[in-house]
Length: 372
Ligand SMILES: Cc1cc2nc3c(=O)[nH]c(=O)nc-3n(C[C@H](O)[C@H](O)[C@H](O)COP(=O)(O)OP(=O)(O)OC[C@H]3O[C@@H](n4cnc5c(N)ncnc54)[C@H](O)[C@@H]3O)c2cc1C
Image (cartoon, rainbow, N blue to C red; front, side, top):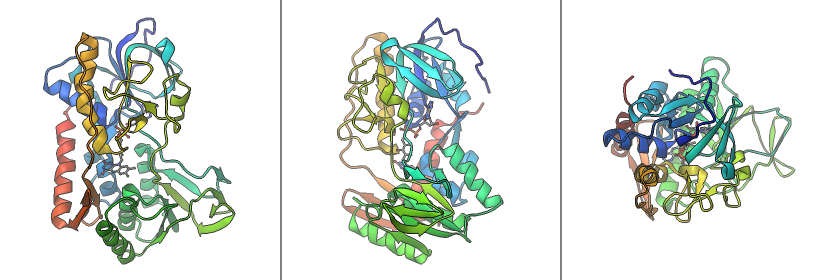
């Protein structure tokens, strides 16, 4: 692993990629495949030396995959594309000065910046810290905590906040790997809100079969003396709380000078450029564009557009527009080799769909993995 301990920050990076999310992985793979080399001095910043693939995370927690199967090593990819890998994280950005600060305190100037830093699940704002709170992202910390529970002391009462696809899949997965924990899903909304009724019915049946409690219409806002509260109302006792609540924007983006929406996500146009700084691109969960949803499927599609538009910006060529698809395939693993699926109003479930999901996920990893 190459660790860069110091920079010549007087020289701007011609291209600075922040975060090894789905979009950057796809762009890197595309460049390598097509023989494109980024300009000399370009850098990728990632807190981890590997990129975790969220689609396989529930399979990892269900003990169907090993950690190594769910991650892509970044160093070989960076080397093949001509990038330097810096294992650090961005903590501040001044877009008007083209200047980015890293957690280590070092700074990088850039000509062209691409942000693909994902999102973090929001949690209750008020807490007395009596319950261990574990966000599902970043994955490295989440996996470490899960391994600790597995090997040492599983929580007696494990609650998962959220009831979207990720929360549902994680609940079933925890049931496999922490069989002695009582598991509860809590949502301010309803289970798998927005999915077809057929899929929701199957999902409810599975939760019941696997002895997972579901509490709907309760927005947990506080934690006090090991109890989760909705306003003042006690909802559930908990020893540990996993957050799978959807996406909130990394806080440092709001102070960057980049135009952001009300939730703090970077607003972009259909070339994936920032609305007010055209030398900054943003993709995946950290960006905001009408019609694009925050899911891996959309981030992957944006990766192909980045792969074309970053070289085009460097060469002064025409840019490609990104058009979000109106429907996306959803595949939800049920921790037993099977999966549920939906596409628009259609839904189905079973073993064949599980095999198909595994095939797609493992194929994605194989395409993006280069050996050292
Ligand atoms: C358990 C779970 C399962 C999911 N399953 C699916 C699924 O099956 N299908 C689907 O479509 N979506 C799924 N999602 C949603 C999906 O994870 C996200 O929508 C998707 O990962 C967004 O991709 P991205 O490219 O924006 O960034 P991500 O893939 O989230 O990656 C962001 C990267 O940026 C890095 N980073 C973060 N902050 C910084 C920083 N300050 N500096 C440098 N680097 C940083 C992170 O380490 C990470 O590597 C799931 C989510 C969860 C929690």
